[in-house]
Length: 167
Length: 167
Length: 167
Image (tube, helix red, strand yellow):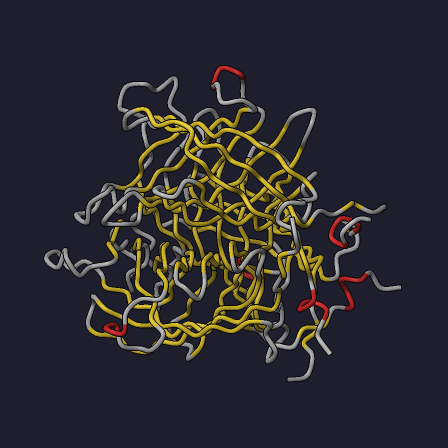
């Protein structure tokens, strides 16, 4: 006898929901108050590669990779760098949707080892239209411009989707 | 054929467990060392609306909204503000229960957009009496007193509850 | 009628997967740049017991408790202290596996009340070989050496394990 949880099968290529969005991090550089959407809240430690630098963000998410295409969601949360030898980040944040298409949020956390082409984080919960969802959010760096702008492709695949039953 | 996960239905009005508690954040103001239960650990950035200010807390949770009614749990974790134009917070914390009624913890994270009357965060896991639980925690601001005290009603609805089977 | 979620039973003693590893936190002391694997990013507040001190880490995980046995995974994330009267920490981190045995990650968060002999945190998601996993990570302090080194036994028990089905 196997408990039910042991027998579960999920197909990574068959999410019950998939959303691809682009994340634009526009870090405050000391002067661009109007444009900036994130701010550094702790300084680099002595360990190198920005180890210990933490950034809080309220970043726009767009459907194509042009910032000017207009946000369809916000990413609100933080990341920090946590490795000496290379750039490695760790993220925890919420994707907040408030559009005609979706209302609700997805909560995401995980490691972001930048040298890897793609990095998988966990979608650990959701609310509203994403009520109780779980899944994987795959990061891919789309653009880095100097120290104050980078763009990630976020490929969000949900494997647990719930219908909301009547009250 | 639909994989089992695609057919799942959950009724938001029918949690398997519901607990309503009040969260009291008593931020250290520089002098009230005896009463304070939270402390600011990073300063506001230049972006406004406390953007970037992070607070670590060990806050009492009460069954009614009077602080004096005595804590039935602790909320341990942090929040920070992350928006320029208005107050918007982001929380990650653990509700720690150690009472005759409950022993265990619930882990919670998500966005807290203060202008909304109610805000939904994710209960992403639990331990002890809340072993493996998942659900939604709905915030509602109950009181704000100046810069150093606010109170939230937290309406915790679990939709995944597990019985602990024999060892 | 009980919704399916209400009837679920899980046996704490019968995880679908169990991994025991040791976590070594080697905090930068100002001089040991070569050895340090973590760094303090915020200072203690006035509340005592390191309340408010936050540490970012990229710590080695070993199969036995000797650091010299060589890392089989990294723990990447942060902790902070959040209690006045005693040492109490809160962790959120990712276990990153990149060995012949496992490739993938586990995302973990929860409270760590140090005075308790064992402390349970939530495994809230996983990727790669731990695709969509959930479970419990039990901490036990194995060694504390002054202010700059401590070692935890982490007993990781997964109760939701998924087979990856064909694409």
